Length: 616
Image (cartoon, rainbow, N blue to C red; front, side, top):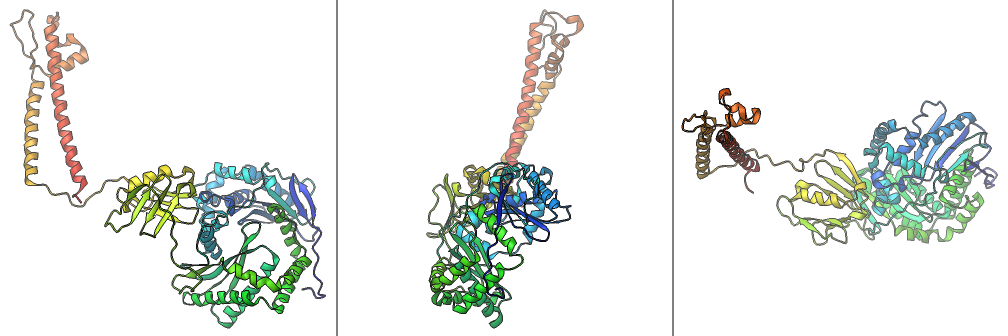
């Protein structure tokens, strides 16, 4: 708190417009600073497009990287922000370039920026808040923060530009500046509409719940009221835990908290710490004890006064003015009232002291704890077992490809399920499947809005390729995300046994006799077909072609016409000669083709039996 004990005043923030974009500013010393914000963030994205706002942000910066002044950008659950600091001319040029580039994103950079963002994503560690939110809401709204950026695997220039045209608009933007807008400042953005709160759908999990996974982080997430008194209560709990876990017990290096907005009335807070796996259970117990004691007794007067002093000091900090500007711009984007004054905040904290504990009891009923799977979970009222779907799909059933252990894959027109017992089943409805991962080997991973995830590998189920075909025909085509070749066998490749099947003695004798018969018939027909024409003196017309004439005469008729089949001196009407030549050649050709077809059919059946492998 300032040395004179006076609570700082809220500065008189000025408001105006720049090209239809609401603008807020304060006359501040130092470099000129600005932030152009759009109300579109991770919580607004479809799961299959996850990461698309981040990609727009990177593409908008593509032409600005060579600038020498400070600049940056980020995307959170509610908004995308472009920030810069420098001279007025540099900042004005920066804003103009950002707005212009958003309207015409560089197509040639899309694939490159996708790779860069994929590298960035690989460097991020596990997130306590992401795990809790994905379990609480599934892949909807703020629950998307717990899922991978699937859009980075496939998004093209057309999809990214469409997203920018729809959401990065002047009606969905706000601007703050550390001084009046420079003269001639332009923001040539497209027209659009203001987005609403992203819809976070309750995944219907039992609460309070303990989520056990492979992690070195331990924590508790709560749904709380969005007001300054609740924020004060959580800050007090964080300071208690810092003292207990690090300084007294020495079981954690860092204790921290996090906060994000879920909707207009609800926020989500996280209290967590890093720890060794063998100490994770103790850390979680201490977090719960601290919260339960605070709920039962409330904060003491000294803790409340300390929080008021720290809040007043923050309001009087030299950088507090930028915080006020950001609060005004964010309130504009969220459609909320202008920020409360420091005096109003202090008054609310003091008035809520008597009943803050009771509110915390209500918040604890919504708790989700994250704990290392090797640690012992807390007892009641926390639930820590598996959670299963209530419904089962109706459709065709597929048993396991190996030993039948009672499991079933069921694929219908509306949903699919994997059933592992009477009360153990997971179901995903096709019309509530925001993403289906697709591998060329036939594997599929389907996400349900309620948080369930089903992996289907065709080689693990009898007639598994038919099951995949049913899934592909019923799932939303816009939800498919191509993932590559996969690691399984090709879905339609025939089996290749290492040992050819045995053949019985009777089968071998029949095969030998069949081949001998084929050779004899072929030799006889070939001899008749290729025999030279025979002359006859019995007819009054000289040459008569008998039925034993070969295909050579027939070929000559086809290639050169009837006159080529007789000598130059004998070119006279000879209907019998023509008929006999053609008929004899036709018989010869049909004989050869028939023999070749018989041989091809036998050979094909033999190869098919060899490829099929032994029965069973």
